[in-house]
Amino acid sequence: MNATPPTPRFGRLIGVSLGPGDPELITRRGWAALQSGARWAYPVKKAAERSYALDIARRGGLDIPQDAVELVFPMTRDAEALARAWARAAAQTVQLLAEGRDLVFLVEGDASTYSTFRHLARAARELAAEIEVDTIAGVSSFAAAAALADVALAEEDETVAVIPAAYGTALIEHLLDEFDTLVLMKVKPLLDEVIEMLERRGLLATSCFIEKAGAPGERVVRDVASLRGETVNYLSLLLVSNPKRARGELRRGCRRRAEHAAARSIPPAHTMEAALANSVEGLAP
Ligand SMILES: C[S@@+](CC[C@H](N)C(=O)[O-])C[C@H]1O[C@@H](n2cnc3c(N)ncnc32)[C@H](O)[C@@H]1O
Image 1 (tube, rainbow, N blue to C red):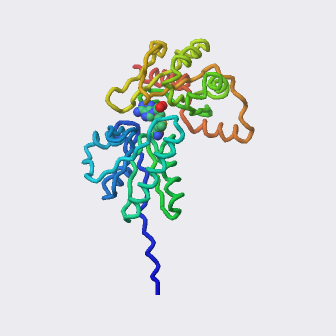
Image 2: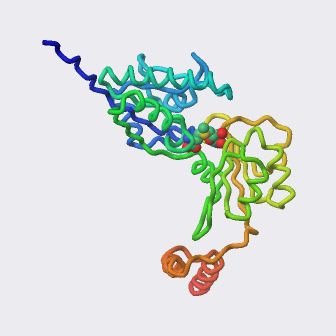
Image 3: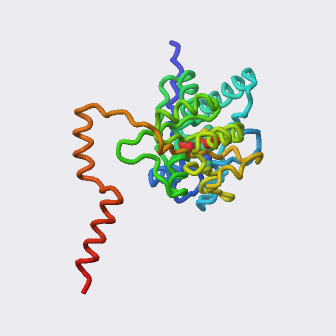
């Protein structure tokens, strides 16, 4: 009788979000996964190159396991080279998981936000549908950037859109009329064009550029125009708020809910100032 070969019991593929650079922003769950005895895999752009994600863990004081594996994801527009690299990374991942041990894939920022992790998970599952995937959420670059710049992404019923700047200034201009805040990711190649458009729209004063948030070399640049002609780091983004945006009406039922929420939430600054002035007056001898 022919014995059927045993089906490999795959380990879990775990996407561990490490936050954008400061290891203090690794969540407790992420930290635990890194120390769980799972094998580590980390992304690099070229073989044997430094990995930004791995450096976050290193700065956090974690020992990099000897058997950690690099997966190469080249930054290229060559579709064939990309497809080959992805196929190789997916096959490597499945091969490692077939050993039965969990594999943590180190992700810069949040694993569900413009991350190679979702794509890798999909490609691995195409090769072995039974692979279990777990995603550990984390701090995205733009959440950390807003905190660093001391600005809000959205308050009350404001709207916010996160887009890659590569859609170009025509779309960005259109979205400026629709959203109170725009997060322009991957802004590097279009920075000069975007600066010119922001100047024309009178929005330079309400824009902020953040580079390498949480990592050595971090920069918050409020005088965005000063960046004209500069080659900035790929790990950079622009937060643009448009205080002039004409707001639409909220739907009636929502407005009621929004009003209730507003009643429960922090009153506007001018109301607080008045209340504070009154209470200070009350304290006066
Ligand atoms: C491939 S996406 C990765 C996004 C990441 N997964 C996240 O949650 O933010 C790369 C883009 O994210 C932004 N980014 C990532 N890390 C950053 C950082 N430390 N500081 C500023 N921007 C960053 C930049 O716009 C960069 O071009």
